[in-house]
Image 1 (cartoon, one colour):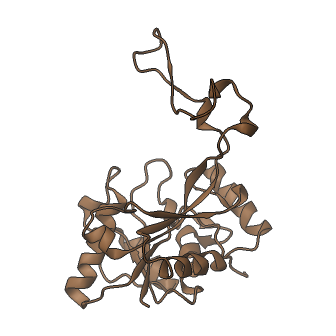
Image 2 (cartoon, rainbow, N blue to C red):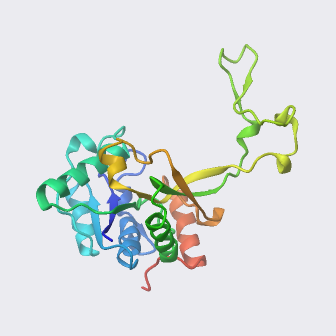
Length: 243
């Protein structure tokens, strides 16, 4: 089975400039996603899609392929994952006649990963032909059953965000009896290429879950989250560098 690990890393980041190549415990942030892919036996190819030459240079130095530079139009603040992945898969198909069976998305901003998790995710998708994709989720720290919308502004009655069938006034109930909900995180996704190319989606309709504990759910978007990631990498059995 041909399994492509695709790591998206654009150059622009207004909140944290050069975020994808800033040092995390002595190595560029993106290096952790590259190392995770290269360390996973099920992954047969590791590619970084970026618009930035300096990110490409770092990616190649750490062992990833960068067969193309992403068009600037697909590296904007509002560019979607689907646009980026559709471009990469079409480029590889048209220029190399390369068509993977599965695509693994490894976002650089979620560096706390275990190789066994990636292996398990790929195995599960390979043995679940009915599934379009798989996403990593973690128990949500706040229940949406106690959240509200203000459809007519803050001077009018509010409405519950969700309904909980079988529970009267669920927003007044103890959290322990409310349905457990899960929050999707950026650790990894596994997607069938035809879902991206033909259904124009990054998930499709049938999405398998893979649940991880909250401590592994680290998403980097500021300097404080860099510190949390460093602590998590030191503390847990996950992909890291020895030096």
